Amino acid sequence: MPFNLRFSILIIALILASVILKVLHKDMIPVKYSLLWGIGVILLIILSIWPNILVSLANLIGFQTISNMVTGVLFVILLFITISLTVIVSGQKKKITLLIQEVSILKNEINKRKDI
Image 1 (spheres, rainbow, N blue to C red):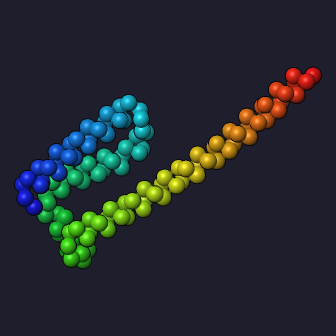
Image 2: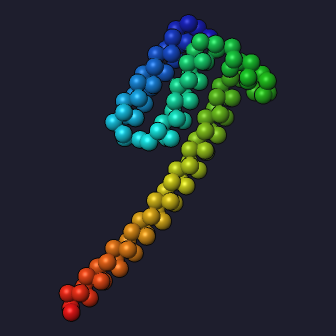
Image 3: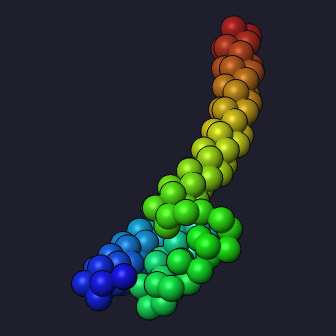
């Protein structure tokens, strides 16, 4: 891997790390969601320092090219993110339904007290 590419990957990883820390510091995302991004940054830094790890891993798993392995890994990561977001959305939907029911009950009680 050429030095320019390795240096670019390292710079991108550092910029991404600073953005993650800034967003985390402003409480825009919880810590548990930022951990996945942190792991990605660490992996980018490791791969920019030791790029032969990626080549060895691709050969070990049986991929013919590194780009095929990267594409496959990114696809699997996107599947996991989609599943986790689906779980989060489902939980939020249940909470919203419960809140709507509670507000409706409270409104009904207020209306009953006004009539008395």
